View 1 (cartoon, helix red, strand yellow):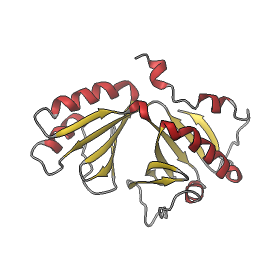
View 2 (cartoon, rainbow, N blue to C red):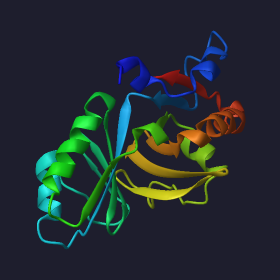
View 3 (tube, helix red, strand yellow):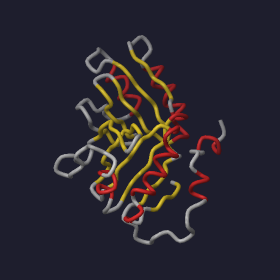
Amino acid sequence: MSESLVRRHGLESLLAGMPGSPSADPGVSVTIRGDLGHINVRGNAEGTGFVKSVEQVLGQALPIRPNTVSAGQHQVFWLGPDEWLVATPSGVAAELAGRLKHASTGIHASVNDISGGQIALMLQGPKCRDLLARGCTLDLHPGVFAVGDCAQSGLAKANVVLALVDDKPTFMVVVRRSFSDYLYRWLAHAGSDDGVTFRDA
């Protein structure tokens, strides 16, 4: 697959229709991370060899504590007791998925490259929590939802994986591509009073 195809995220036409002079100091800046690949990994965290094998390939810890993220060369999200999402540069996703499959040979595990079905948005700025609160029932107060936390939730009418990446704050929102157009438009509408802007990675 060519790099141009890998990097297309389906929101290019919406970006092209944006005003030519976005706010220099937006309340929320949304970056479309079409440069990320997504890998779903499933296995028994208590099973002999599974965690060790995955961690050796990733070069970082697999988050075992519920609703947390392991950050390093990759971002690894805990989705459930036996399920994780690995976000990694799109150029290495297929090769990484292959190595994870090879490492889990003989182990009860599943590895799937789902890059074609998901996309990540990075939301940054002082109005992030206010904007997300308009469509999400999670308590995103920094004393409750801390850096390194993640959760699967609803945002407006879209199912998402939501994580707090840093305390700027920067939130990462992973959504199905089939809902990305809807979510883009919802963010633009719900954040219109906050000066929301959008850009490509």
